[in-house]
Amino acid sequence: MPIPTSLCADCQANQSEVEIRKRQLCNDCFRKYVSSKILKRMETYRFKNQVGNAKKRLFLPISGGVSSLVLLQVLDTQIKKQLDQQNRTAYDLVLFHVAPQDNDGGEDWWQHVQAQFGLHTYLPIIKLAGVSQNDKHIEEDLQLLGLSRQEGETDEQFLTRLFTSTKSATARSDLQVLLLKRLIIAMAKAQNCDSVIWGHSDSKLAAKALSEVAKGRGGSVPNELADGPSPSGLNFNYPLRDLFKTELELYLSTLAGEIRSCQLENQEEEAVPVSLRMTSIDTLLNTYITSQGEKYPSIMANVVRTASKLQVPTAAQATACRLCAMPITAGSEEQQLCYGCERMKQDVRG
Ligand SMILES: [Zn+2]
Ligand SMILES: [Zn+2]
Image 1 (tube, helix red, strand yellow):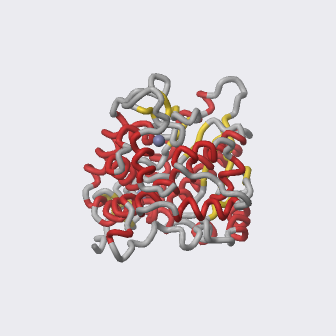
Image 2: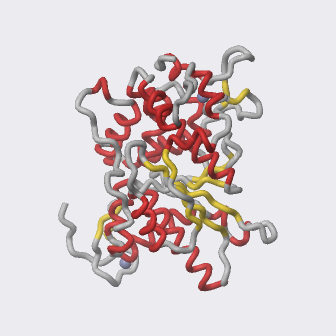
Image 3: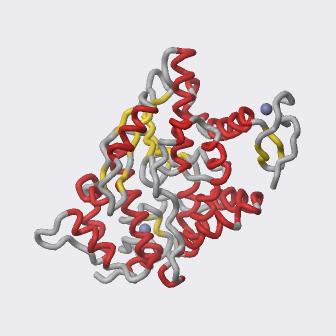
């Protein structure tokens, strides 16, 4: 849609350059709009909320995609401003990247990100197979799915076999999400971080809420999507929750080339597979929401808002699932897996 020439609705001085939620803004005001939405969700980590000199360490997983890069850029700008104005920062960032299983590259890109955003702690890139080395309980817990390491199998071989033992695309994606999350949590704890700061946009959170329900993990949705303490023992925060993927893409496009070049290629959502049978519920809903859902912003925002408010027993009241840490809401006392993980187990050849 061509944007009619008009003044920016916010500053009333510059020509408008973008249309956002039916308002015409200049690039400067649009960037302010995006970063204020993000920083509003980071208020827990302001100076005034600091207890004594206890500076928080925040764990920031970076996929290389648009969302986590925008989050990094906004937080980096905030930290620089704090250093300029007060000569100290309210929090420290620990950055982490998990390499895709079939990809050895990434080192040069990681160096490049480090050169652009130099103030933070960077952990070495780890592959997903590294979950075995970093999460001491994962192998024991995977045995509940009937999966255990065979004699002489390397971490890589074990991981590959885990994935090939899934009978459906949904179980495979479910397992991948689970392992990735366990690795991120283990690394964050090893780094003495208080919180994990997730780069999920509103679109991603809405897709996640709907796919969790479809996979029988509805009970975990409020825990998954709320800001604050999570069953993992760490706080989770989703500062991008009020912004759509398309808005984050637009924001990135207005930044300098050096920043834009920190995007890792081929990190976009999985392409839609040709056959539906090969499509996981996660991919299906992600694709649907990015292509259709963003036309209905208020419904999307409602999905996330409503889902975060549902009441479920906390892990303290109920037994926690050994694999995903979500509360087990029904079943006998000996049950060790939640309903969602039990469903995944049915799609795994042990
Ligand atoms: Zn303006
Ligand atoms: Zn579970």
